[in-house]
Image 1 (cartoon, rainbow, N blue to C red):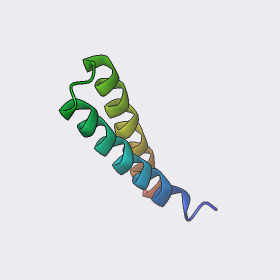
Image 2 (tube, rainbow, N blue to C red; image 1 turned 30 degrees about the vertical axis):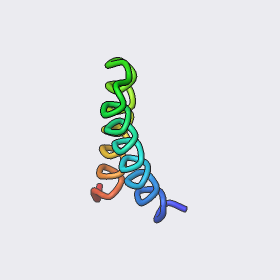
Image 3 (cartoon, rainbow, N blue to C red; image 1 turned 135 degrees about the vertical axis):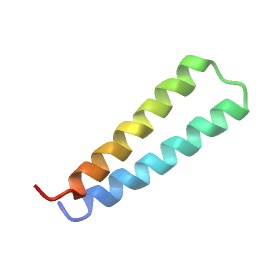
Image 4 (cartoon, rainbow, N blue to C red; image 1 turned 90 degrees about the horizontal axis):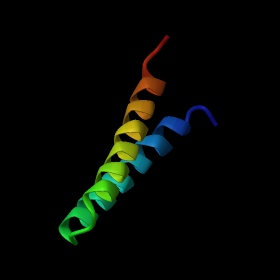
Amino acid sequence: MSAILPILLLALAGILSGGAYSMHKQGAARGGVVFVGLLAALALLGGILWLVPS
């Protein structure tokens, strides 16, 4: 399970960033776009940090 978790986090980051971009293009409220973008950044950071050897 721990081998697939960073892949899932990176995939989630991609989906969320695409969703934030889509929300922005559709004229959604800025707060929602920023919130989804922050979730994408956290998922990306978590996926990257999971891959860094300790």
